[in-house]
Structures are given as structure tokens and as C-alpha cells.
Image (cartoon, rainbow over all chains, first blue to last red; front, side, top):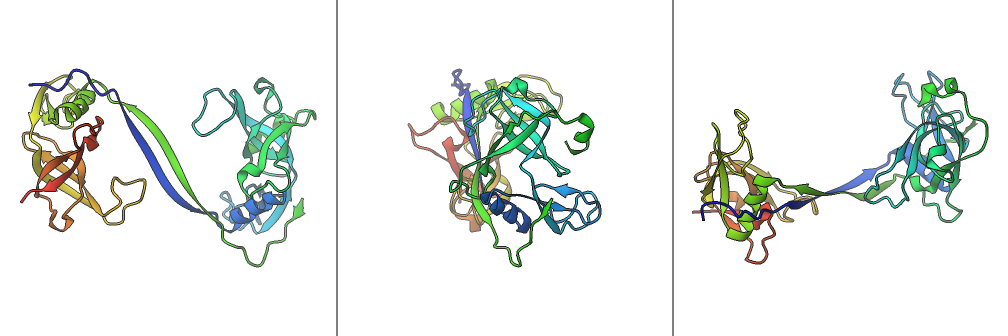
Length: 166
Length: 156
């Protein structure tokens, strides 16, 4: 035969498997363990006073140490968000769902979280939200301890109050 | 905002995890037929493309002048090693073998480019310039992937 088969192989499975051993580091370890106690920790920059959540050892802006750890409130503002319409492997949430940047009150950067208990179309920049936690005894000290954020019904935050902490 | 007292000692925290990308890739007309050749004919096919000679594995255009198309050419299952990268500590689930092995480039006899594959045995004798031969997965176990060639073995 002077050529390969006409009936070709159409697809190949190329499973990429990356086995990691991840070390959290001091601040991330404290942050995750605090979630178990229903606390959200941040760290304050010794130079600018900005509060980072999750806490960082040094400010990426001033490079100064952030040695004061602070406890943040469980409420904040949706600064920016994305409506997910495509199911993602390994994530069993009914579509469409919303993933948002949430700036907690007093924090200068935002966290990523799901927004639930409202229609995807109702989420907007500036909407006030609060954390919904896993019940006592079920929290493991990982990022799933906050199940999601939900709207509080408070008036929207003005744009100027969150534009610098998207 | 309340200050959180920093503990004197912080217990280290770590977690083992597997990041998985379960891709399914579309082969295309040319590589799809190359793979069917491995599975159904136990033959290694190249494509003679413009100004590049016989390219193995084949591709549907020339890398030199981007001209499409070419003529199918069967190449030998023997060839010469042009590059070696030995993996002395393979990672389970990531590498194609759990024992030390080597990634190699093999320029098959009749081809003008080299094919990436593995050598599993007699690594102490493996050099750039070593002559090697393809070993095949048994009939009925070839699935139309590059691992239908199980490995290359050193030819004395």
C-alpha cells in the first residue's frame, strides 16, 4: 500500500496531569485556618495602610512589610463580575452563574467568589453582598468555607467608592 | 477593624493536589492518517513537502515556504538518535514511564526531520548517534496514538 489509511484517527486524548504539593506559607496558612473559625483575615501595609485580603507578607505596591493582621467584616461590594454560561469541567454549578470580585468593607483589594441567591442578570457593579458560610462543624479551613456571597438588599455603593479596588 | 494577634509559631500547611487538563485534540487530515497508519498498518508515514524533504510526523504544509500538500512516503522503523533528555526521576501520572527513561528525537531512515519519542531500556548505552528501532504495541492494543510505537530500542 502506498499511502496511509483514508479512514483517519479523528481525535486523541491528551490528558495532562500535574501532581502538585502546595505549601501555603505562614500568612496563607493563618488565613485558611481562620476561615474555619468564620474569620476573614487581611494584612495592613506598614507604609500605605492598605489592607490586603488574603493577607500578604509585603505590599506588592510599596514593598513594605504588612505585619499587622486584621479581621475583616463579612460584607462588601461587587466591584466587577462575570456571568458564566459555559459549564466547566469539575465545577458542578447550574449555569448561568456569577463569579465576582468582592471588595470587603475596609479592604483595598478584592476576593473572587460566587454570587448566589439572586438571578445572574441582577448582579451589577456596586451591589452590596454578604458571605454565606458553611455551617459550624463542616468548615475545613479552605476557600470553600465561604460558600458564596449573596445580595444584602442595602443601597448600591457609589462607583467612586470601589473603582480603585477592583 | 479589629487587629488579629499573630501567633508566636505558625504550623506549616500543605496540600497534595492533582491539576488535570482532560484535553481531547482534533488531529486534522494529515496527522489523523499518520496515526491510522500506526494503528492499522504498523507503518510510519511521512509527507514530502516543499523544500523540507520528508517530514515525520507529517504536517499539511511546509515550514519553509508554507506551501500546502505533499506526497506520502513510508519511512523505516529504524533511525538515528539526534537528541537525548534523560529523565532520572519520573513523576507518576505525568511522565510516560515510572522507571527512569529518556526522551529522544529520532531521525528515521528515509526521513529528513526527527520524531520525538522515548527510549526505556539500556539508557547507559544511549547516545546522540545511537541506532534505534521502533517497538510496537501488540495487534488489537494499538489505539491510534503515538504510543502505538511503544518505544525505541537500541540496535547493536
